[in-house]
Amino acid sequence: MTALDLPKRKQIRLPEFDYSTPGAYFVTICTQNRRCILSDIAVGEGLAPPAVLLTPIGKCVEEQIRALPQRYPMVTIDSYVIMPNHLHMIVRISGEAGGASPSPTLYDVVRVLKSLTTRLSRGHLEDLPLWQRGYYEHVIRGEKDYLEIWEYNDTNPARWAEDRYYGE
Image (cartoon, rainbow, N blue to C red; front, side):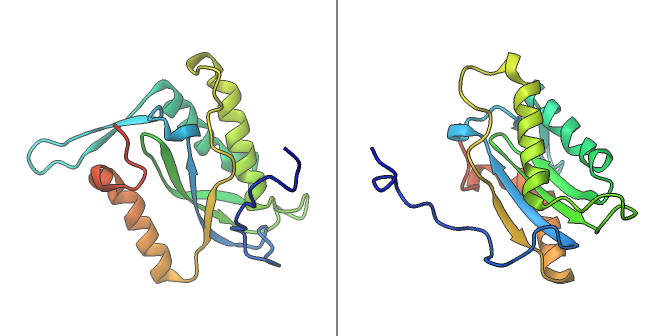
């Protein structure tokens, strides 16, 4: 198979957009083959909301999400949810950290997260990679958009059975 025979991947990034620009971004990252290895969703009793029960791999992912602001002082993770086979995050890039180094791009942040979690969870995986190639991102445009995405993250476990990524 030559490079000409390979399927063309759809370009998901905005052309000419600088992904190190200060702003907020909604990111979705899926596990390889959408394997349900990050968490389980436990149905709540009565009016209690569903609970996200992290697996050892999910706990590793959460640790690395929480460590991103220490790695990149100009990055904050405003909201995240770790679902069984994917995660959603609101990543905020605030600009340069005291002028010492340039802001990371969104790609840098996601690449480091995927790389570290893959390496740290090797003992819990078969030979498959932890993550799918690439990720989905959305540039958050305004407070209304931000609040809708925050609520989506917050209520995602309650909608797991209807989720497009749902898997038994």
